[in-house]
Image: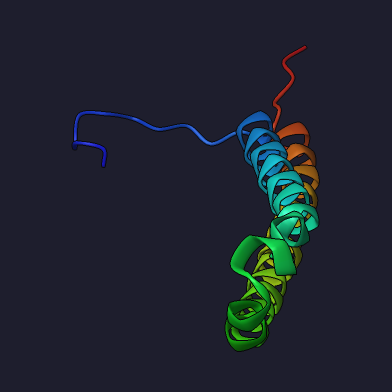
Length: 102
């Protein structure tokens, strides 16, 4: 948090940078979501009996992870898109507020 003496300046460049960070977050959600099913437990991992007992719960957990990651990806993409729009609007406001002396 900033102290009263600090001045924080928000520019279109700062907003664009924030949007790029959310693009990175989106990519991480997508990459992790693609890898959830790499953790499948085959019959050989737990044995046939345990695989039949624990398998359905494990698959439910995998689906839950995939859905949560998909939700995170959707949210981060939306934030990134909104920040991109905001940066464009901010840039136009910055340009409109330039005073030229002749």
